Amino acid sequence: MEGKKGNILIVDDTPENIDILVSLLQDYNRKIALNGEKALLLAEAEPKPDLILLDIMMPGMSGFEVCIQLRKNETTKDIPIVFITAMNSQENILTGFKIGGQDYIAKPFDFNELIARVEAQMEIVNYRKKLLTMNHWLEEKVNERTLELKAAKLKAEAANRAKTMFLANINHELRTPLNGIVGFGSLLIDANLDEESRTYLNIINESADNLLKVITEIIDYSNIDTTNVVVNENTFNAAETINKAINFLEIKAIHKELRIIRNFANTGELIIGDELKIRQILLNIIANAIKFTNEGTIEITSSVFPISSEKGELVISVSDTGIGIPEDKIDLIFEQFYMIDESHTREYGGLGLGLSLAKELIDTLHAKIEIKSKVNEGSIFTLKFPVVYSEINSTDESSTNESDIQVKRILIAEDNIINQKLIKLILTQQKHLVTVVENGALAVEIVAKEHFDFVFMDIQMPVMDGLEATREIRKLPGNGIHQLPIVALTAHTTPEDRRLCIEAGMIDMINKPVKKEILYNAILKYAK
Image (cartoon, rainbow, N blue to C red; front, side, top):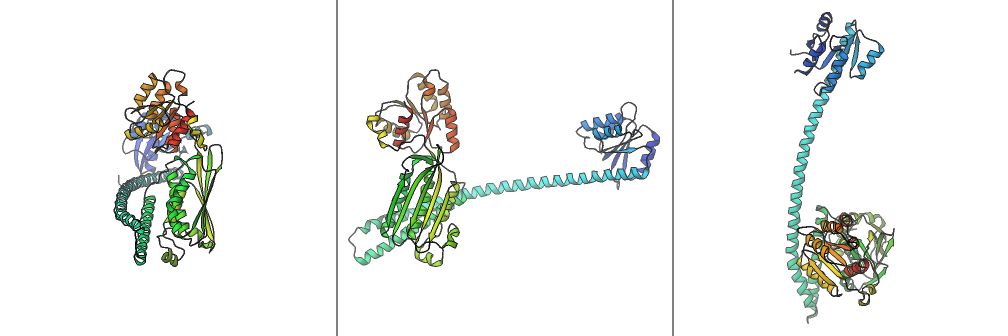
């Protein structure tokens, strides 16, 4: 059996033809079947044939019928079939190919042609076996590599978690003593010190401040570089956010005798975006402007430009009269640890991470940054953030005047005791009648029994969450139920969270931490 080229099943009801085929195909292992029924049994038996030579005209079951049965069988459907017959009309030939035959040999045999056709089919079979073997090998390798990558991913995630914890601990351990140094240093500034002592103290304070900035940049950049940054959108006032960033850094400008100019246009209305990241970007850009400006001004301008009735673009420009940036260096300033030249490192200090961190955050928010700069004249950094107009919006402070307030019955569904007390206190300051429940099930129960003008609904609560509670409330009988304003109060801040709230039957979503002006505006807007 060894050394044979393959296995062939010969199916023919004529013994003379069988003898000829057996003699011609001595290089192969051969099985013989004198009828279709026997052929089907041998085709399924191990070892399975690599090729079937199949007569058409046979008693009982014809070769065509045998072929059809073989193709229906999952274990034999791929075995190549070569028809051998004196029925060599074009119609028979076409029928053979249509039902799954690979070739056609006419009787009486031309011996050389038969051997050539068999060898050609066996070569195809061997190539197919090699491909199947290769595919199996590749699948095993892919599975092995997939398991390796999964293990590597788990290991990397564990390392990142460990690194995050380490950075958090290091941040705490470094900032704790620094806070003492900076705090007491600032107290000593006002003490009655001689000139030499005051000089030493200023050096200590400046060194501590620089060290704090270095620590902040390292921690911030490590976090954004090693974790999956999530965009957390909330409702905010752009002018307030920009002012907070400026106020935080203004003391540094005053120490350098720089003048800060603020020029805000139509940024008093409420918008939706990632306020924290926008503020962090601004802190880095403004700090950079102050750092590289020795005299003159820092001007911050802002405006919200409408794109549609729902979307806008918050544009903030920070211009300075500083040292400027060479044109061929502008594209390089966002690289990690980059300084225009070594003299800047010595003169201005820092690690060169602030702008790199800002650029990472800008990309995360799908925002844009444009830079114009001239050496020794100054630079203009323009930031463009995509934002959404808040449905709870009022730039007119008089909208919350007491003369406009109408007392409402308001339900608060909130499981956190501190949040319950805070929201209730805010609402009772405007004389609203407030009821508090700690889960969604109780909210549904009390709305079914009592009348309310407004509902503030937390999302994540025990027993029944806010989404399910809202759906159940909307099912309650009564004409007023479908018009009852339900607004989500939640720490979940993604656009997907907003979509789920609206689909559940809420009319808007307010992000925590809540501001009383936003709560008041929501009541004025929706509680008719």
